Figure 1: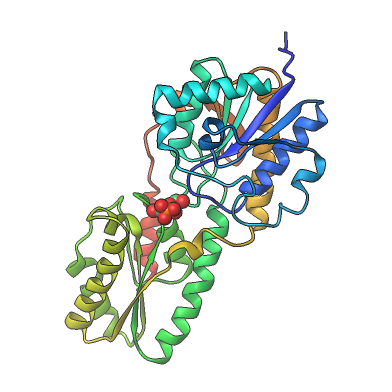
Figure 2: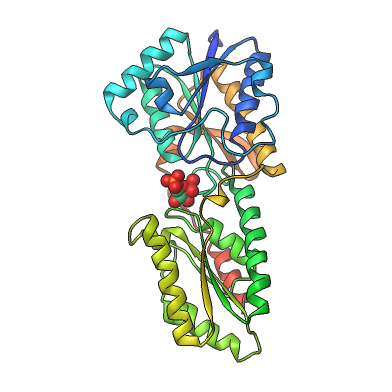
Length: 335
Ligand code: F6P
């Protein structure tokens, strides 16, 4: 027997990702269509603690499907990791009559959703991060847009790199994950791709490769590096230092003038691609189907290209499977 849910909430949490707005729109409209009240919680879990919410109507989500960022704002809320923060959130949900909550974000955000679910507020997570590093799903909202942005940027870098017979080190986002670097590395014809999932040796995997292909007549090179590699050695400023050190080493050992580029937050902004808008809409709709029946503690996932859902704990504990084949393809055809 379906539970008669009357109101749900929606929030976006963690790093923003293009397509989050499309998910907010889909959740809001699908829920209104079922006669539910919908509350938009601002700034992620922080909004639950600080009691910052707005009741949504059809027009609250007009003209956002095409916009990057998140109209509900976002936050990485440390306070929500503590029992006191969680309890504040629960009492705000109860006050608004929220009987289900949609959380759009990454792994960290799903932990908060689980904490609420086990305390009686059913939550459904929707994977939203440009990194595509959530193990339980083939796809996360924002990945396609971010990759297309990287390809556009690297094509531009390549024009100037080619004109000057240079090498460009390009560092792309991916905290602990090389999905953006691997896919865009293939798409941009990078001579070398360095990602945290694979052991690497700068001499063998970068310098020797450049020297080898140089002999075949190639005279410009892209070296794609996932941010996670540099992060292993520290945070932000280390990423820039890592890129410059690598560029110097390449120049010194290959004789090719080398420049460093850290693409940074340009990858997180911008209008979502068609894929991100459609997947976000499908996932948002699915989340409402679950919550409207009183089903919580689930994460919406893409499996074999289809939208389904998993238990949050099961989802969080799934092992990471790396696409070795894609890595092999990259290394074979980028000479
Ligand atoms: O959104 C994911 C991500 O972009 C990571 O790739 C990156 O390391 C991190 O967020 C950086 O986020 P911020 O600069 O907002 O802390």
